[in-house]
Structures are given as C-alpha cells and as structure tokens.
Length: 192
Image 1 (cartoon, rainbow, N blue to C red):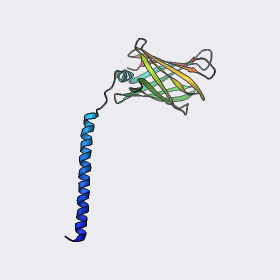
Image 2: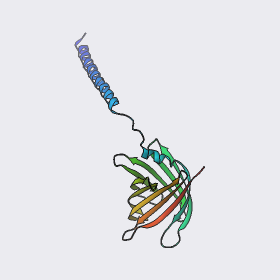
Image 3: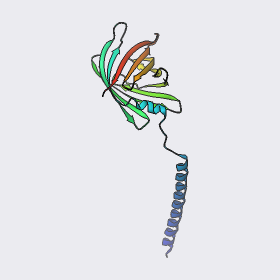
Image 4: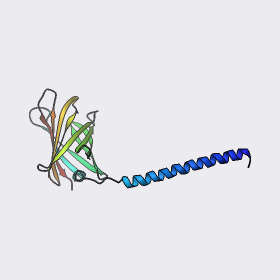
C-alpha cells in the first residue's frame, strides 16, 4: 500500500472510529431519554376544555355606552388540537361589518392557569389572558389587560356553563379612568 493510500486509510479509520463513538453515545443518550421522557397525559382541566368542541350558535348583546345593547348573531366552531388545546373560529357581524375572531385556549400546568389567546379582524394586537375555573359556579374566568377600541384597558371574561349544550360568555372592560362595565354578553347553544 503506497504512502498516499496508507494516509487515506488512517484518516478513514480515525473517522470511522469517531462515528462509532458518536453513534454509541447517541444510542446511550436515546436509551437514557426513553427512560426519562414520556408523552404527557391530558389533565382534568384539558378534558373540561374538550367539552366545548363543536359548533355553537350565538346570540349577542353589545353595549357601546348607556342604554339598550346592540343585538347580533354569530357562529363559533371549536376544534381540538390534540387532547390539550381548543382552537376557536368565531364569525358574526359587528357595527355593520363582518367580524372574525380566533382563539386558542389551553391549560398551563406550570402556572396552574388556563391561558387564552385572542385575535380578531378589528384589533391589530393579540389579547392574552389567564384564568381559573370555579367548580361551584361552573365559571371559567379570565383576566388581564389588552387593547380594545384603541385603548389599553383591564379585561375580565366569564364563561358560565349551564349544561352540555348551553353556556354564557360575559366580557367586562375597565376603560382608563372608569369603573368596570359589562361590554358584551353571548348566549351559546350547541348546534345538533
């Protein structure tokens, strides 16, 4: 074997040895991870979210100030993303214009809070709220801050379940320098 071929053979042998060491280490790491890692299981909180999956007909009341509310209708379609999250698509007409909104609702086990992310066709800024569930009142309440009507304000949303086919959503806002007011109420009926 010539000097050139011996040099190439040594390089190949060294490279092969290096690959074998890396593969062995990788196999060890995978075996270790298999023992330590497992797929998470849905919690009772995740299961409660799955109860909202389906199509819901909505009757809305919206207060833009003192006096009688503006009435409207809409449709919400909720679908499961695996066993953990619910993605919602909401369509209606508001202020004489078509309105669309999307949300993702989930349970954050680290925070021990429900999380809601909302985006719609009227506001450029997403709203992220944290919430908790009261078993006694059957109410899921979210709170936080967000931009509505171009103003940063406190928000509180309460979704109360009457039964498997009926729930009520109430949204309260606290505009700057004002007290909390009821801004919107939606009655949901599951479509059969």
